[in-house]
Length: 354
Image 1 (cartoon, one colour):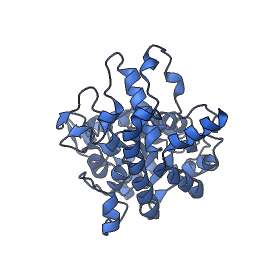
Image 2 (cartoon, rainbow, N blue to C red; image 1 turned 180 degrees about the horizontal axis):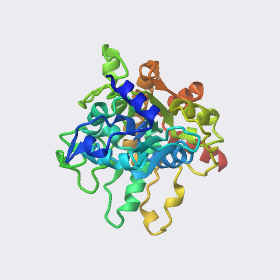
Image 3 (cartoon, helix red, strand yellow; image 1 turned 30 degrees about the horizontal axis):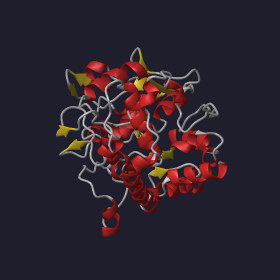
Image 4 (cartoon, rainbow, N blue to C red; image 1 turned 30 degrees about the vertical axis):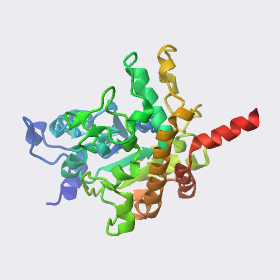
């Protein structure tokens, strides 16, 4: 029987096989794709934690509280064992009080950039829906840099201009074990991670059969075609006062086929969604303002990457029937800004104020 038919029959009866038939030692021997309906697989500092909490606050979802990156660590059996316990009860599928199946979801914002993660999604969870959220590469870099500088204080993080290029020598992947020679200081921060179009292209949703497209996809990562649909977002859409967020609640509910309403988005302040996490004033002294003149070299690289990413997403990725965005017109306006240095606008505003 086709997997989908078997899953459908299981849902009708609410019965699932015992875990011992699905996972034996370190090996998955049965169908486990029914366990996970959706996954937030990218990108860090783009609102993934907010999405994890928001999507868990409805009656028909279960989203593990915290990152679940077992697939990127090459341990799919750990994921299957964890989610069997979380989406079943006494050998039956977990249901809402009205009899709707509870949808399993998870968050692992690095999954789209690791070598093993997408391979395992394709093999074990081929139709799981993906949610990928992004932001302007310049603001992403500042947010990600300050996050790590704060977290590893007093150990210093290299100067931003020293983080241009790949995170690891000899590999374009975000590695979870050993992969090439790591940069000193912190090997997770680099401008290449802001090539959001490179990681998105790995999902195999575009033709990749013209020189024009391939010019924008100059990377050596594997292409791992995935059957599941993709909901693509920009972090601005998580702010209810932004025009691009007007239909987000309805659109993402429809994408996930939710039976219960999501909570309304709440007004937040600043450029991120988790600003309350920085409470230590001493640690905050290591924060950088990416708009300072000394960081012009790294901004130049990030803006050029943003321009290419926006072009590829607009002209290729969004043409796939498998790719969904909310408020497309407003989303495209956000993309248009990726090829501009946001610091120039900020400086112009500061001049007018003075």
